[in-house]
Image (cartoon, helix red, strand yellow):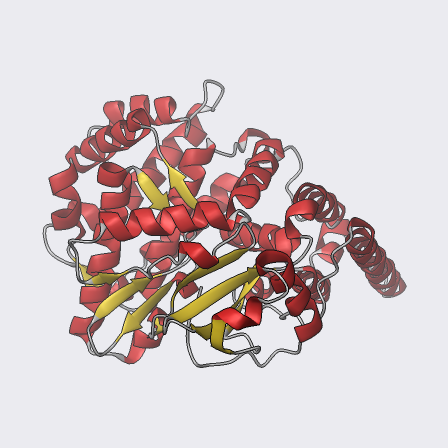
Length: 442
């Protein structure tokens, strides 16, 4: 969660908190999309063209409508939009991916009367008596909560993340409703079994909506990185934390992607720290913050520290899973194709019924993704066309809808984190010696 002085300019909009009002929003959205589709098909038929339903559904106007409604609903609805923009980004037309990506950074915030009710419910009617100051305008707003700054009577500078009302109650119905909407809108390829992904989205959202759990994860990471002063993890204030309010020390910093204009050495150092942490999370801690949203990383120019925020999506990996990945990377760096194939089957990337052509394409794509790790000098993310080649290979494989499988969830979350780090390193045009970072773990 970003902590900064940049207050939110979006207007305050009450969060629809009853199931019925949330369903009505999605119902209205589905019918407005249906209306758009009918009108557009009518226009194309009038021009003597034969419209394809998916082309008409996947219009920027429809995507903008979806994104806007999900942003107003916040909670699970907005989160599912974010997940899709990250996990299916390669399969969507660029305009659509861009509009859904807006959901990653955009959120309205609760008006004061609604916020006050939430705080009274969490802390009791006399909650103001604990604070010397409490800023009622949020410094950040995201999918399931917004952040306020305050100072307690005992002098602590606090960042307070307050959950939107009704979020926990509405998770399961929101995820189901959004999934139906996306099917109606043709955003899910036919034949793709999204059930495991939806079950996982619900499980993860219930975890993310438990701020006491997030507080424990925050504290754990603070302990794990206590010997690494290059990282700064806010301190948990357990006395002010409840299942719907998370209180931590307020940390001053700027968004990490502001560093795109910083000197090359600064960008290289920050990305080396973050990618090094990623390998430690997988192989050493076996505990990973799996949400690669750039807003979760900030930078303190005065100290050069990388600030880590938002531990709601923290996931523990079994030892056997980390070992499989260790073996996979080991085989990959050694260029042992038969071993890569065996381990890819064990991980669940490849299934028994995967046709040979698709298996070869997937193995080639995996080997392509290892290029940065294979070289013995820093990899220049800014000068590489690897992301473009990977995207083209991925789109070619996605055309094989019939055999498209969503990988096991642990792998999907790990891939999502790898992908997010790759994007950030590319945006920063960083040069990182990846081999030196990964070798100690293999």
